[in-house]
Amino acid sequence: MRHPAWPGYSDDPATRRRQIRAQIRGKARYVEENLSVTARERYRILFGRRNAHRRTPSEYERPEEILHIATWETARSIALDDPRGFDARPLTWTGVRGSWYCDPTQWFYPPDEWVETWGELVPEPFNRHDSSAVGIDLDGIRLGYAPAGYARYTHTCVCALNNRGFRVLIPPRYRSDYSRDLNLLLAHAYAAPPTFGEWDKILPTDEECAQLLQPLWNALDDSAREQINRDRYGLTDKTLPHLIALRHLAPDVGLPSIPRLSAVTYQVDRFVKAQQSAWRQQRDDQIIAAFREGWRKSDISKRHEVSYSVISRILKETGIDTRAPRVTPDQRRVRTEIVAMLKRGSSRREINDALGVTYHAIAAVAKEAGVDVPSQSGVNDYSHEQDA
Image (cartoon, rainbow, N blue to C red):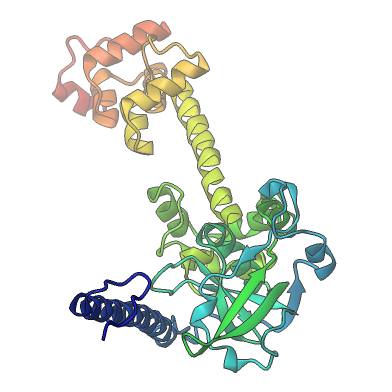
């Protein structure tokens, strides 16, 4: 008996059986591949949750006061796909990075619903993946992270506000959904942090920061200033503790309480760098004054530890003629004493014994000053003793 032909299959029973077996194997392979992809994704998420960065107690001390640097009214007025440029809007909606690696069961927000809440920006300088990372917490539990590029700029800003005693809060939208494929509850979130221009309005300007830091800078000891000078006016682990020890003189600047360079704001770095220009101007004035007093370039080079070329450049920019012969203050003092002793009638030997100058030098000074040198011809040591 001949079976009816199946659409898409061969009329030959043996061939048809091979086609059916191949189709079954293909479907099984397809299901196996998809299940393995799902299993790998589930493993990746669970592995990320277990190995997420754990904050140390010293990494973040939660301040008591709260600072809302954005409002929900402003956040609702800005669309997720706002076409304006980044700096043309006060806030920017951005996806919270790594939210899948948090466990939504830690919160009591209802699933499948978008919730408007408040998120806390938390800097994580000891994060092994990114030392400038800025976490976003819900109710003190990490939800995810701000984008890396944004965090690199705002990390020190958040640290400065934390050091001034403020917790920094921004408006996020949060939602959790259950994934049947992964058999996991996954979190999704968007946050609306302020743009860089808004951060600049919150923190002191460079001029204000300079006024706040000037008393602290004036109180630094000489050893700290010399070390900062050797470091080319860039803060290091050696010099930052000196500023922290005097942070009470500039409390509104937001210096960290522990030596941590990643917590120092750009305004502080720029202020310290600006002191190099003031130091150079002071050094240049001292070099010019020393040259006008009569000191030679070699003496100035040793005193200020600068090269001949630097001294020549400074003097050239000032318009000082360096070709005239130099008479140092020490030489002028010796010449004055020679003239005074000659006028008192002292002999060349007496002047030589007292000042250690040569007879030729004494004669040259006497000629220049128009003073006669007492003649010693015919007078020997025995006569000197008899006169005494």
